[in-house]
Image (cartoon, rainbow, N blue to C red; front, side, top):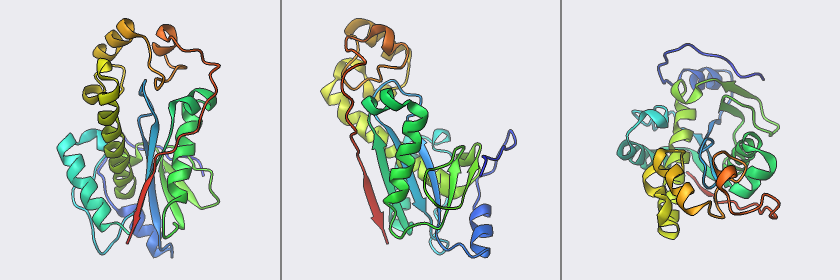
Length: 228
């Protein structure tokens, strides 16, 4: 199905999930990515089947939440969801197949790790290459509880990964900007060039990189999953 467009302002709710359950779908999963616009590291995706009996209050687009609030909600999502999963596709693969396709690949991997398996997908803006009925929603993470939950766990997982990589590459300040193209990050690239985990096909990394794009890409998957 084609992604649906939305209005300029949204209210995040569980309306779509309720409508789909009324139509007979028992395991509606929300799917979203995190880190698509970053210069460093993997793109992450989350997939979540929320429980109507154990709702999580306060769900919203992860970008609209403070970091501490995201962490709190991620714990509640993992505790209360029917199932959740996170997967990631590394920077070398992003450079090889482009960020759009890498994001879709990460989403597919996250969906395939859900147990129980979903029977319908609500996806932020795109479609996922799985043989399931699905609906793509523009600004879905601000409109739909299930997609918001997926965006939160993907963002929290990726932020944790960036803090870990900060210990390996402290010169880039990854713990602060999480790999995005901030002024601090760009200054570090000017001083130090790119690390092996930067996305070499992205500007300004491509201009400043010390590593050739022809390097053999490796598909590195980081995933965690839980089910109740």
